[in-house]
Image (cartoon, rainbow, N blue to C red):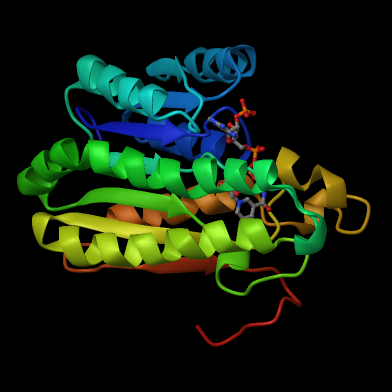
Length: 243
Ligand SMILES: NC(=O)c1ccc[n+]([C@@H]2O[C@H](COP(=O)([O-])OP(=O)(O)OC[C@H]3O[C@@H](n4cnc5c(N)ncnc54)[C@H](OP(=O)(O)O)[C@@H]3O)[C@@H](O)[C@H]2O)c1
């Protein structure tokens, strides 16, 4: 998509990096952001080495001023936003009874508050893109834990359920402006986030980050009349449940 641009948060590894690569391969100019500058630079150099055009912006999504600066940097570099991938996230397990407020706050800030603020700040550019071609796209990375609360992941599940609710509300506000909003709800994906469980679920049996990136491609290839509010990505043997 020559002349179009995408902002990907949490793009230095895993799902975000796979989505950034797919969008770059499809011709989007990219702004890729993550928290740790060295890790981000490594990922961005990898993408540039593949011939992709990438603006690299380190930002801690727990800080509002860094989110505002990120969206502004994207606007200065590309002047437009056709795709927003709101993907930065952090998961910290633990029983509610033992879970310190600091960990709860971190997950709320990065997984939910940042998604809201990034979307809010991006709306003017998304509306311009929607008015131009009727198919601006926002993907908010939730989780299957956001659909079905799981023990030991209460804080994470609550933030991810919040992302589903936010996405539904945003669809109601933005779809008539040519902006589609989709919540992604994956089960285990083979990324650094699931290293802790690699002993019991081998990485090759997990969903691959590239599978999630194909979901973005699908959403961009359908007609403006086709809205997909949510995609659940589950593994063989995972239970399907009522939504
Ligand atoms: N892997 C799974 O099984 C799975 C399943 C469902 C949903 N998800 C969701 O998918 C998204 C991507 O996760 P992943 O699996 O690809 O994990 P990952 O490889 O660990 O990537 C997480 C990304 O988020 C960034 N990030 C974390 N905290 C941040 C902060 N405070 N500010 C800015 N960036 C921050 C990381 O950058 P740094 O490394 O620099 O912090 C990294 O780029 C997350 O929202 C996660 O909750 C993952």
